[in-house]
Length: 401
Image 1 (tube, rainbow, N blue to C red):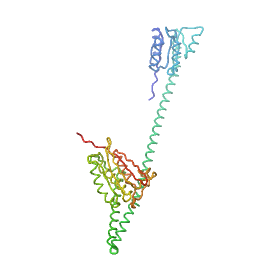
Image 2: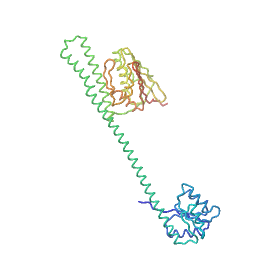
Image 3: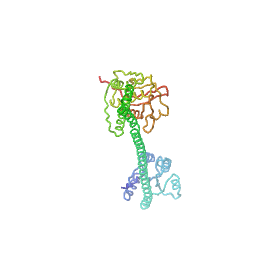
Image 4: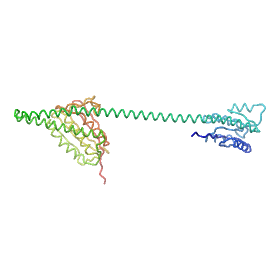
């Protein structure tokens, strides 16, 4: 519905009877809001506080006259466009008319007021003011509509960018998934099947020492494949949003000790010295299963890329409201190029370990997702041929007194 135009008309005269006469005449012919003022000073206060569409201004007033008041009105940017009609005594010399125009007046009427002339002039000016009002209203509506369209377009573009990013990530996840199935799962199974076939078909052809070596290789391949399947299952659940997130408080030392015992045989096979330094009283608030996966992956990675005779350490300290956990090794290190892509799903950075162990890079991606899910951060520092330090944080748990 179009807004109704109801003009604000300011009547200025120091004689109350003159104001009454003008008010009565205007109210009889126009639907307008009428405002009254008896001095120039009062006019300036009114137009500073409210919007005025037209001013009927008496010229001869005590103190500040109508011309001076008009000049001050026209000098203010906020009020310079208000039409002013001067009303004063008849002046045969027309000097008052000239002064009125010079002061910025639109028109000049003489007293006594001719009712028909005033009504005609007001109709003309108010029609012009109404047209300007409606044009401004239309422009405001167009402007608001344009702003809405711009915002909608921005939202649509942002949504499209997000969708493109999600699509790219989904495609990268899909490619990673099929790459693992086609290559990283296939190879260890081929090794297991090949060794098992040799044992079943030509068992007597091999010595006891070779039997043990085959069985150790089968065991190692099976363990690596099982760990890969664990990571693959966890990762697929994170991608579909099906993985449960159940944070609770627990002693960090307890689960780390269990993982330490689990991975130590792998370290012993490479004569790698392992150290654990985690205070027994240290508690965190996080999802226990996720943190188990993180620590297991980081320790196995450290063992994988550490040479025989090296060391792997896991340690933790409390720092403010967080617990900081570090997994440190003196292994082969990571190149700057790979370091920049370490946690990206669409980057192919898989490398073989120092004993030929294969990997997918999936474990580190899982670590990042799980740590961030638990309101922590993970970072890595590494130097080639010197070693690597993975550090992540978790919320500390405080016992209530």
